[in-house]
Image (tube, rainbow, N blue to C red; front, side):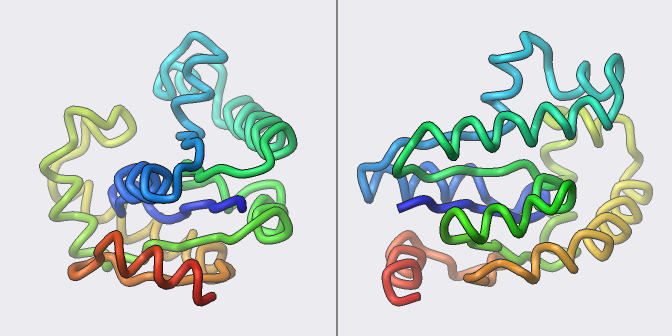
Length: 169
C-alpha cells in the first residue's frame, strides 16, 4: 500500500500522514525532509541558490527513488510536487493519492501563524500571504483535483475518518 498525501502548504499533509502511518504501521516519508537530508541544504537554500528548476528535478528524483525502493509507505509530498513533470499521473499509478482540500481562508488562518517556520512565506505581509495562497492554490487546484481521494480539511477531519475513507476507496 502506497499512500500519497497531496495538497497546499498548511493543509495537514505531514500531520495526517504521520498519524496514518502510525495507525497502519507503515513507514512515513516527508518528501521535503528527505530532500533536505539528501542535499544537506534547506528547501529555502535549494530554491535560493540552485533555483526552482533544480529543486523540482531533485524532488522528482527523490519521489521516484522512495516510491521504487519501498513497497508500502505513507508519504507527505511537497505542496508543488503534483504540479510538475506529470508527477500527479505518476503518483496515481503508484498508489492512492489523497488530497487534503482546505479553503484559501483556512490555509491563510493556519499559515499566518506559521510564517516564521516556513521559509517560502516568511517575508510576506499578511496581505501578500493571502494573495500568494489564493494565486498558488488556484494554479495548483487543477493538479490536486486529479487525486483519487479528496478529503475536506477545513474542520472535522479525524484519523478514523481518513483511515475509513482509505479502506473504502
